Image (cartoon, rainbow, N blue to C red; front, top):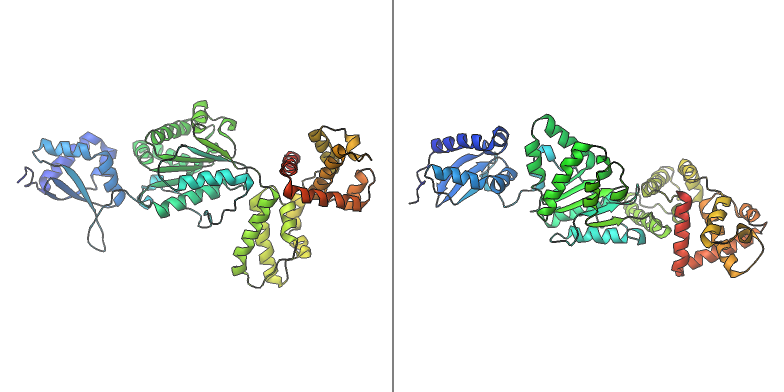
Length: 452
């Protein structure tokens, strides 16, 4: 029989009291005090614990020192085993890793939106790389880039992808400890830990996760002590090959008041820009949402051209675009009407007014002339050379798309041209943008420049 086989509760109490001196009051109260001795058999010390997470954390961080302390008292122990105390049933052995739900409230993961999954994310040219990178990280396992840094403006899908990654990891790899929270939540928990004198617990807990996801990291800028702690947490996780995923509204180097060393470290992995949505992506998002709404609002129909109109008119923010469609379906269901152009004008008057970006035909003409390096007089003049005619049609298309001017009004600003000429130019560019990638890129660049 091994030495230590005769270990008693009194022996364990003595060892625990000594561990209080070894680990300090905070660590003792959080991790050692909850351990209840059950048995020592064949070199395995079994204790009961109140949660999976505590058992897992003690095993990872304190087991060696506990074994050494037991040896000083002649108890030969090879390893520790933990059983979770259950008030409604028998004790269960703690698994090798603790689920995220068992985490301390100090660093509790933020709630995930069930709508934000990969299945509901509409992929297009502006977000294809970000989507592919997020998918790769969500597969788990070693990744060539760490961290993954996603950035872009409001409503472009950063948070959607962050939630989708977390959903995928928790579903397919439940043994991983995935912690998702916003930068504000990280800062709040850090300040709370300082106030409650639990900063060591905060450090240990954060640095023991398998995947750390922090949304809107730009809000850490200017918060010196929080930045410092984030930097050390980030380094500790990356050095352990733990995955870190970050999002922000701009690239690391463009975040004002963010320490240079942090900016440099954030940029050391894969930095991906979610570009502003193009027309095709916005239309795809609307079509996807309509399919979802068909079950909620059976019998409602959308008239031809409505989705295309919305995709053109509401171009700066996907959230506003989706909100507009939600309002349309709700309104149409109440009044029992088809969602047609008349209903759009009645129901979305405020949104459409806001989306009128005050862009003028004259501004469009100047931008187009600069882009194609031609004189403004040649753009609006009568000359039909291809080098002038194509930019002129591009300007016509942009004027029709980005302003509320009628075709006759646009024609007046293009040298008094007839509205049928404007219509022909708009149709020609609409055809070309489907087949000519150069024209499509020019249109997107010009639209973005005009909307800045």
